[in-house]
Structure formats: structure tokens, C-alpha cells
Image 1: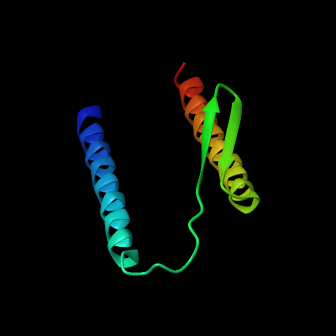
Image 2: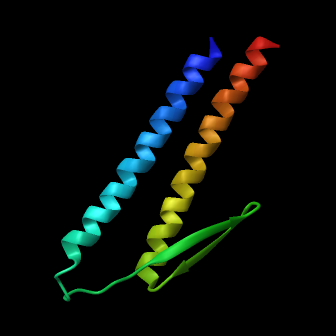
Image 3: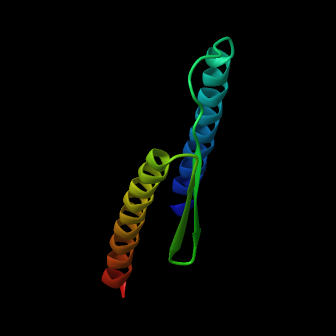
Length: 90
């Protein structure tokens, strides 16, 4: 019974990755002709429990910090819900 569920999850994951790559490609095509605007970027690298935030501006760094906190909260909630399911079966 677990195998069909696993196949569905893998298929959904592959589809999401392909849709994300397509969106990035289409966005690059759309912005190709425009030279106006400013490009900003950043990254969050998590080493153990310590997140390192890099950004080209303070605004980007703050946005990435908020995103990192939100993703951590979601990951913690998913972990705790899964852990509760494990405790129920023991």
C-alpha cells in the first residue's frame, strides 16, 4: 500500500520541479528585452541550527530572514505532526 503513495508523491515532486523550472525560464524570456530596473538577490544557508543570510540590500536580507523563519516554522510543524503519528503507533 505504501508503494502507490510513494509513486504519486514522487510524480508530484517531479511535476512541481518542472513547473518551477518552466516559470523561471518564462520569466527570463519575459525580462530579456528590458534593461530597466534593479536586480537584487540573496540566499539563506542553514548550517545546523544557525541560518546565515546574504543579501544585496538590507531589504532583501530582511525578506529572506522572514522567509527562513516561516519555512522553519512549517518544517517544525510537519516534523511534530509526523512525530505524533509515530507515537500513536507505538
